[in-house]
Image (cartoon, rainbow, N blue to C red; front, side):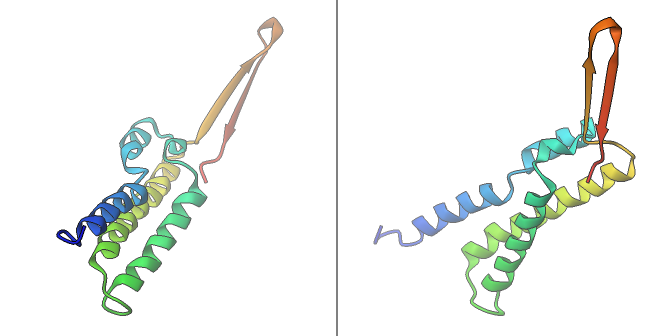
Length: 117
């Protein structure tokens, strides 16, 4: 560790990028299927966006410059902002997040849809 003092910081930044950008892998599928449930909850996206944004401010030259924290959380701001924007785009299309169909006896059917946001 003493010969490579920045190794642990680099590993931590990599893990931070993965944690902050968690909806990235499901955003394409959510857009294709018009289903935002695939990206997790709206509240989680909002909280992660705000948290990453605050850490970007903290790790910038305004408070205490730290490139490792800055990179991980800037990626989080971009991806979480994209996820929130995707939610709005899908909502403007008039799509719903979930649709459940329950079939009962005698061919009775109940269809329930919930709003996007």
